[in-house]
Image (cartoon, rainbow, N blue to C red; front, top):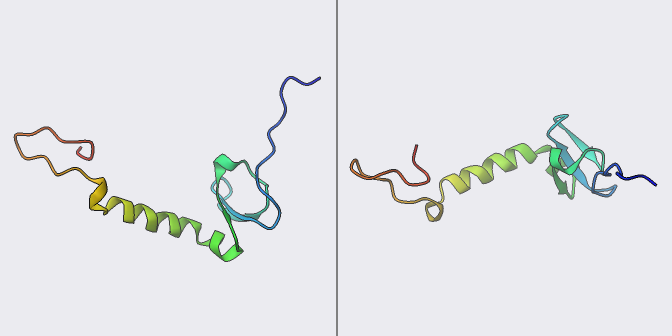
Length: 82
């Protein structure tokens, strides 16, 4: 009886992923989930995964609901400060 089992990558054939390790699009469960974005419904969506992530990061960074007001010269900076 084995004490440890190798983890199989989660996913199904027909689902598309962008592998961060190999920097390429893969179908199905080829690489571990920690190394990929997805699943995506189509190969084209997976091919644009890095741009989609960049766009979402920009939206988050510029969303005023997620930023404290900037600290004045006599105040300590908040979590978004340096």
